[in-house]
Image 1 (cartoon, rainbow, N blue to C red):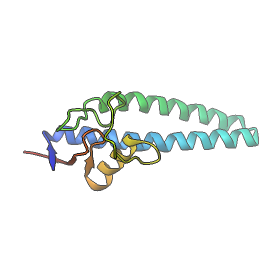
Image 2: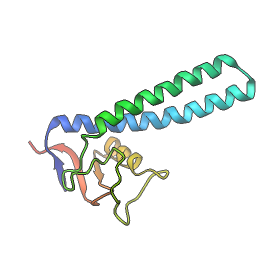
Image 3: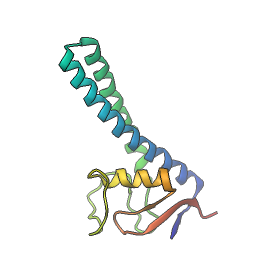
Image 4: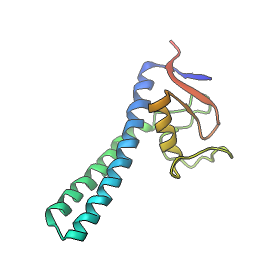
Length: 127
């Protein structure tokens, strides 16, 4: 079991994981708002949907900036950021997303299994 090098990396992992989960919830809410606005022909609801779309884009940009530095201590691959690396053969996903599974593991169990090297890492500092 590996640990993260600094307390600042713990904060980055938790913030990035929370932003991933929040982004997924906002995407679902945006689709629901657009569907309801389309069904009821409500223009105000469509404008709210546009604001939600802007919030999703803003969260995506902020998450990308933070998640690029969230790396597995063993393989040094950014686990919460999209990259072209091949994943472990038996890496599990949640709703088709490896990043969402890692984010939920970080928030709920305070440890995660890297989808690239399949090693478990505790989200605690070595010091």
